[in-house]
Length: 109
Image (spheres, one colour):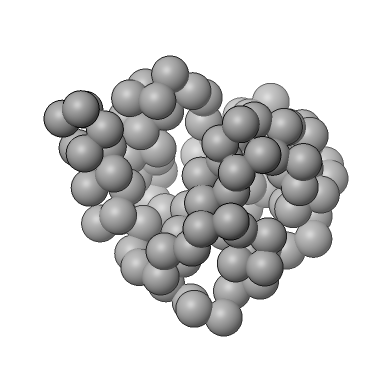
């Protein structure tokens, strides 16, 4: 997500979907979010109907916390990122561009 201010893109999408934002350990370690929001082995295990994961590599420590999600949509600039092995749908692209586009489309409906 490059910097803390960009987390608002996740918050906007979560609001449009009626969901919540979860973060990776890297985001917590950077001080951008609280540990209570962390998904993964050292955070929470979640099982949402839809999990949109943006900019996460797919390290086992994160995927252990989300692998029971019903539908996973992964967004990453690296087409070879491990997260795509866990995804039902994958978008190779910059989350800073993709997230606002998804949010805009949802709000237009």
